[in-house]
Length: 494
Ligand code: AHR
Image (cartoon, rainbow, N blue to C red; front, side, top):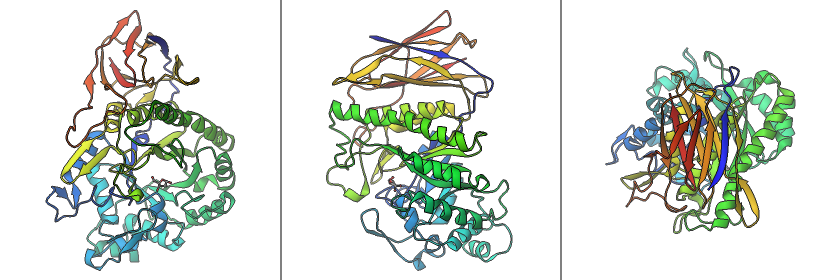
């Protein structure tokens, strides 16, 4: 058993962990919206305005703070006006990015924004820049936000919604370097300036929060140009996308993977630490006061689709490997809470690293769901900076830090410490120095399992779930915690 040490170093000036770091993403992709979240009002599956009640309840339980929609790549093909008004009169749309399926536009702006209201989550709308028009996006803002008389707000009222929803978060395109238009960043920066200029806040108190389509992985030049060339009064957030993918041409299976594939996935997940650090360094150079936020609005594991499923639908299983990605990535975001103010796991239901999978009437919660639930105690709590020393997880002569961690103090004074051991075979004892805080009583929960590829299935939906954890002792201001291989633990101290 190896030994790691974590020291908690509370600091008055430490940032708050924005609850929006726990955001999710719902794209028109595969079975995320249709035959996922949305089954339609006539379905036998209990629903609210067509959205499954079991999913609504599970997401409320998760305390989902925001939801990004309608894409992803789909966003830059989506024309919002086709998704409002009487459903029978809506034109169809071919989902060219994801399987060329024809959608009937029955799930549109009203459905999405009403769902967010029901969930108590902030909507985050991704605007169409790639194939849309400035006026189209400006009209969308007026439609959803304007309280007075105007062509768009009158139309909204005709369509059954009197009061505006008040949408604050707006993405100005998505992956402008790729599916959003294959633009150069110098060109996109100018396009962004134009769109942002005409996206009036339509009377929304506090104004719109506009997010520029950001870099892929280590494209630091992209962030540099956005920060340099866009006036900061037009820019509230800069995005970043990073997926834990082994190799885009050989992603490997989501179950039945080898230890080598596991190690490589962990390597990719851990890369988030370096990516965030370096993008933030650039942002600090152009914005030392920290006015513009880093928004990691797509992250998660990406593997080959499950056998016999549509390759364009990105349906994959979710195992303990994904739990490791989630626990580690959220710890990274917490520790960078000064600049990372929002993040969106890709995606919420039935796509990529989903927290929920459905099959007909059945629904299961994945290991990733359980990690996010266990971790949500950190939402809006003050970060407690840590110092960490960890043994390595070694595989085939390569090394990664075995243990990662983060800590915070909530409004009631409760302290939460999240610990992850990614080592596939070794337990790790972690000594957590909590002497700087006067804590007496601790309780804890754990997510662990026998094998790395364990997962919940429709036949065995509760194989992996949170359990009470007792393998720790408090002695003279130090907690000795025994972390099993590939496990996630959250301790609560009073
Ligand atoms: O999440 C799936 C896809 O990944 C999104 O549509 C796109 O933005 C990214 O490339």
